[in-house]
Amino acid sequence: MDGTIRANIKPGLVVVIVKKEDQKTGKMTQGIVRDILTNASMHPRGIKVRLDTGEVGRVQAIQQ
Image 1 (cartoon, rainbow, N blue to C red):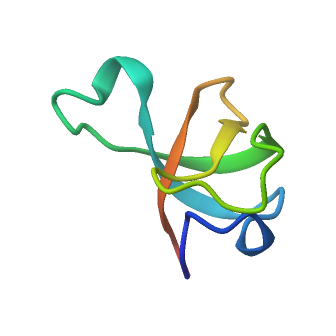
Image 2: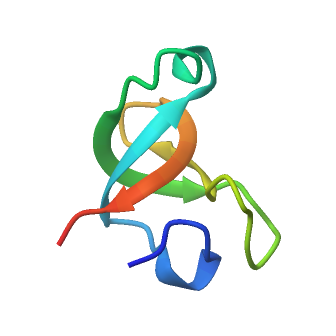
């Protein structure tokens, strides 16, 4: 599924994000979505979410 479309992302999903401080290195972080922070229906760089751990980043992939 596409991490740039808000309708694809729901709380409880396992996703892979890139945190703002990791954008230059491309380091990915996996976790469970707690909150969806982007209000727009889509975002070209990925929907911004908060994970259960409190980390914030943009969704790069949704795990099945």
